[in-house]
Length: 156
Image (tube, rainbow, N blue to C red; front, side, top):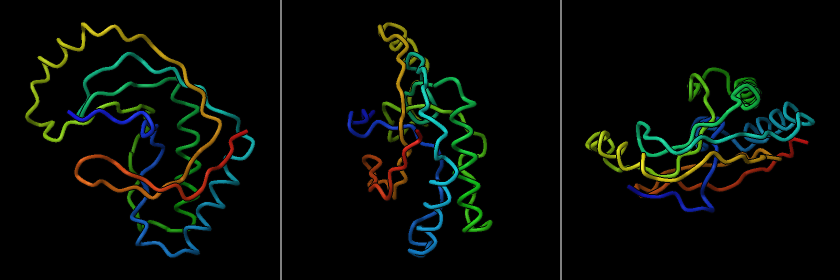
C-alpha cells in the first residue's frame, strides 16, 4: 500500500484522453471552454467521510455530490465540444472522493483484514473547500500518479 503524499492529494473531476492525442489548439480550446463553464460557479465545499477500503486502495467519499457533479458535467461538455467522441467518459458516473493510499496489487489484498484494521483508526469526517479547478496532464510512473498543471481556473 502506498500512501498519497500530502502535496499530491486531490479530488479528480474527469479523466480526459491522453494529452498527446490533442493539439495545443485543442487543449487551449478545452481550457477556455472549461474556464467559461465554471466561471462564477463558486467554490465547492465537500465533506469527506472517514476512510474506507475501495477497489484500488483506501479512500474517503465526499458529499454533497451534486455540486461536484456539476463541475464534472461542465468539464466533460467542454471537452467533447472540442474533441467530439474521441475520448471515453471517465468516470461514467461521477462520485467525488479522495484516494489516500493505493495498492499496487489490490486484487490480492485481504479486504476483510484491511477493513478490520481500518475500523480501529480514529479518523473523523473532514470538510474542505475548493476555490479553483486545476486542469492537469496526468500519468502514472508505476509507483504513483504524477501530474503537471496546465491551467488553474478560479470558481468564484
